[in-house]
Length: 55
Image (cartoon, rainbow, N blue to C red; front, side, top):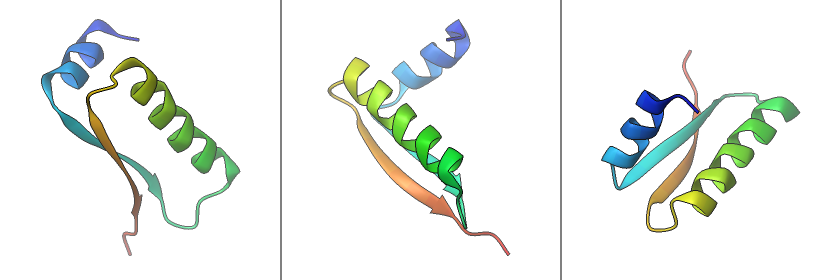
């Protein structure tokens, strides 16, 4: 992971991991994969999974 991205993640206590509306399996896999990777590495942080529905 890029060092600037790591610093950005470590700066906050919580975060939102979003995916687009009408997701395909890639969207689900990416969202859940990132969620579990972050939860395993940053055990004290809270993450919310979100669907972005923009018309």
